[in-house]
Every structure is written in C-alpha cells, then in structure tokens.
Length: 331
Length: 289
Image 1: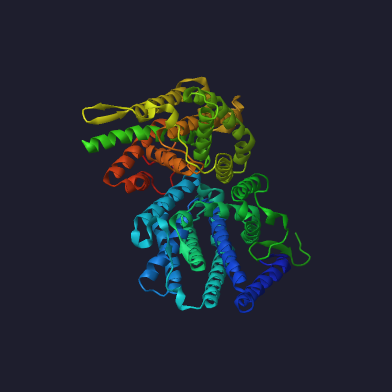
Image 2: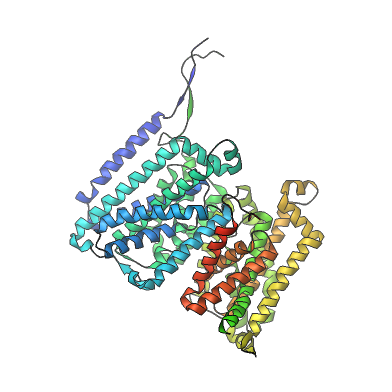
C-alpha cells in the first residue's frame, strides 16, 4: 500500500494571485471618493451597478439555466420600493437596504409561480411579471404614475457626501453579492445548480434537490436586481416606470454576460467593464449602438458561447477542482 | 348589453392575438423554442406592407399577398442561417440569439422608418371603420374578417399537421429529430418550413394589427407578450388551444377595459398568471391534465 499519490486542489497559484488582486482592488476602490472628482465617483457607481446586474444575470442563466427576460421586475421594484419607503420618512439609505430585502421577498413569492415554467416559457413568463408590475406602478399616482418620481430626502447630505455614500453602498452590495455567488458556486450548491442547468431530470434522479436550489438562486437574483434598482435611483435621483421596468436592462445584461463569458465567474466582470466602455463611446449613436449590441451578443452566443473569458486560460478565483500529483504514485 | 358587447369585441380582438400566437405556437411545438423576435418579425412584415401601400401606392390586399412569399423566404433564411446553429448550442441558445435579433430588428426599423406611429387604416377605408349593428351588438367588418382568417389559418394548419404527409414529417421531427432523420426526414429542412410558416403568419397578423390600430418600431415586444400569453393560456403545443387562448386573452382585455380602460392589458396579464397558477404544476412544462 502506498499513500494516496494524488490530491485535489481548489486553488492554484494564479487563483491565489487573482483573488488577492481582486481583494486589493476592492480596498483601493473604497478610497476613490476621497481622491477623485464627482463624475468619476458617479461613473464608477454606475459601473458597479452594471457589474451587479451582470453577475446576478449570469448566476441565473449561466449557472442555473434560468434565462430571464424579466429581471427588470426587481430593478423597478427595488427603485420604486425605495421611493415608497422614503415617502414614509424612512431614511433614504435605509430605504435602499429595505427595498433590496423586499425584492428578495417578492422573488420568494414569485418563485413558485414562474419556476413552473422552464426554458423559453420561463423567459417570457418573467417578462410578463415585469410588465404587470410596471402597469401597477403606472396606476399608482402617489408613485408618480407614468411620468416618474424623484427620490427626496437625500438633500440632507452635501452632493459630494451623497455621491460618496451611494458609491460605498454600491461597492458594498457588489462585494456582498460577489461573495455570495462565490460561496454558492464553490460549495455543492454550485455543482447542483450546474447539474440542473445541464439536465434537470438527470440531476433530480441523482438526488439534487431541484426546487430549493432554483428558488434560492431566483431569490438571490431578485435581491441583487432590487439592490441594483435602488442604487440606480440613489445614483440618478429620478426614475420613470417605462425605463426602470424596461426590457433594455435585459439587453444590457445579455450583452455583458455573453461577451464576457456566460457560466464563468470572471466573465460578467469583464463583460460589464467592456459594456461600460462601449456605452461611454457609442451611446450617442442610439439605434446603431443598439443594433451593434444585439449583433454582438447574438454572434457571441453562436460562435463563442463561453465568451471572451474562455480565451483566457486562467481562473482568477479558486472555484474549480484540479487534480494534482503529490509524489511518485504507484498504480 | 354593454358587457355582452364587450365579450363580443373581445372575441374579435382575440382573433388577432390568436393569429399572432399561431407562429409562436408552431415553432414551440416543433422545435421547443420561443422565438423572442416573433413580435418584431410581425411588425417588420407590417412595415413592408405599409411601405408598399403608401410609397408604391399598391392596394393593401395585393401588397400583403406580395409580402407573404417574402416572409416565407425570410423565415426559411432565418432558420438556416441563425436558428439551426442556435439549436445545436442547446435549449437556451435560441433564446439568446432571438433576443439579439429582436433588438436588431427594432432598431433597424427605427433607423429606416423613424419612431413615428403608422397605420394602414387610412388606405383600407370602410374595412377598418365600418360595422354592422345587430340588436345592440356591434360586429366590425375588420374584426369579423380577422376572426375568420385566424380560424382559417390555425384550423387549416392544424389539419395540415394532422392529415398530410407534410404534417406527419413535421410531427415526426418534433417528437424525435434523430429517429426522423433515420427514416429520411431531415429535421433541419422540416424546421425551416415551420419557421417560414411562422414568419408568414406573423406578417399576416402584423398587417392586420396595422389596419386595426397602429404600429411603430417598438410595437413588437408587446405583441410577443400577447402571443405568448395566448399560447400558454391555451396550453403549450396545441394550435387549437392557441386559438382558444387568443380568444380568452382578447375577452379578458375587453372586459378589463370595460371596467376601466387602464385595466385592459393588466386584466390579460392577470388571466395569464392565474392560468399559470392553476394549470401548471411545479416543474412541469405541459399542463397537468
């Protein structure tokens, strides 16, 4: 008998360096409001929001196989939830937190309904839910009806203070959600979810508890979407139902995740960065810009289904399994 | 009587939704995919007819009849260039590519035709405005025509699928593409025919929408949602169910509108959600019984 000559590593040198760099980057980013002008802080806040959206949509579609066209339901609910609470004298930043929590509750309520559907029907079913919520908001005149509403209560802060607080809150949500997805994927839930994505029946027959996993993922994505929506409101201070409940959010998420790399941890981060740059450069071209987004996303889905990150042979985070040889093994 | 009339108008409106839903239902039944660009393809077809009728001065009926072969060709082309490849990528890839296609079509229409709202009602005269009054009930010419066409298209397609060799090939490819291929029925060719038919019926529906009310480059998603609701309400994968689903959706919307015009679309969504709650057991795609 010889000792086991192989071991399974969860991390590699690259992933150790990668995660250290990411943590360092997070710490550096936390100091940005002290050193940079208002536009930089505000732009970075919207970048964080895009990253949150991409990471959440990737968790749903890339790991759970749940392609949703209706995550804007939670974006809108988070934003309007914040307005609703702020109108009732809840301090605005507390309202942002509570609205994100309320979005998770909404997702838990909706999960038994929409998760009856799979694949294409799930995609459009979630969209119907988003449209229904948008119509209900339009009917409510205390929320501004169809014309939109501003977030009041933030004017107790100086503008630069307000921007800094919103920035830190967005960064905190981003770190929290990235951490949640990381923990989820590293453990057996990650393996279970990916098994469901690849073949739900086969996964169930192997003992994966399909329903709690899918519902849990949907609730997490609802929380993330709600947080993103509340942060969008805190960053721009004004929302209207047509745009906050608009399907263009799904177009953006689709672009970020497909270009970056669906089903990879790092892909959505890369995709959000690219989308941020593309938007900065081309958003003025409007229709052409959107045609470009649609064509690019479609082309990636067809020709490079794992996105740009699949071209990078490095995993920044220790999420995989690697078989390594310890010493001279004997067979 | 106003309520009875509301139900009647709902049935006529439902004919239009059933026509929109026809292609969506066919593609789902044959390939198990939802074409997220379905509504936009319908609007694209309607814009072509509108352009022919207004810029070329063609009468609307010949313009529509001329556009249908183009729509068949477009559907065939769409299948062989994009969808066949998408299907190979797994069941989620067609969603991603058709969503991308939807964005492209919407914005291309925006560039070509501007965001203005268009209608064919101006060139169809009394067809779009006229009606019979029968004992307090209103029977619009156009509503009746759309209902007849919808019943004819969905019923005809149902018969073709059930009774002809063409339909048998399609059902075979739908049930088991690999085995169908073994006995000489190549799935890719059958799928292309299904998509061609779907795009043609979408063009028909889009044109009727433009006669009935208005279209603009952003009209597609709403029509996709209505079509999808009709398909689900009627039970996925059955054309007869789709016709009934369309009618139920139409009636729900007009009854909602009768209570308050703001509730029209909301009422349709609620019926859809209730059907989802009642008829679909968790984890199953097909209604339980």
